[in-house]
Image 1 (cartoon, helix red, strand yellow):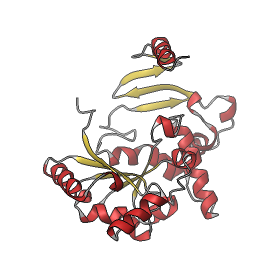
Image 2 (cartoon, one colour; image 1 turned 90 degrees about the vertical axis):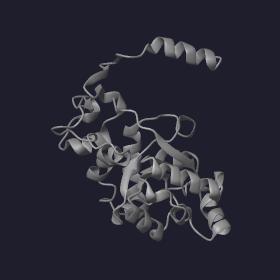
Image 3 (tube, rainbow, N blue to C red; image 1 turned 135 degrees about the horizontal axis):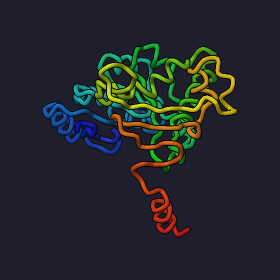
Length: 253
């Protein structure tokens, strides 16, 4: 019913050749699709692209028409100021994956610089093998602290920015015009969080409680398009014990 969306993906500059990038970019644009790429995730990736093409990954993709379609760019750890200005101009969504980038030793996305350039910023976890806990509460917390610690500015990585990255901005990046916030006419996608737990008391401002005190364990209910998927420890569409047993068998536990 429109909830599943198909996007094209080029993965990264170093896993493609120029002719293929052009072909995929043209196909994406002509079919009205969206694009997903990994961008400047590591220093080696960024510098090797400069050596090969004389351009940063962002500039290289742009020159081949990739950003003519709405694009999500994951990581963006080593993007410079010119790259940020380019992404902002082309309407690219930059996705911050703080825990994965730290675990792999890739570096830290300069979140405050991206925000200053007006780039649409969203929040991601990356894959299980490079993160382990696909926990958006943890990503929000780490993203906020990194922004403060790397800039020396305690107002960086504000609650308003981080919460918007985790909700409305992510929906915008995926082209979901009726998602990401609670508003009339929007899909009934929501999460209920228990603010009466010990770790969440006192809560003087719900935004700061969600960002700095709450965790995924405090989630009471999740709903997607009006359908309850999880409520008070029970999954309505999944057989959790069966899934656990299958996983232990596959992993030889």
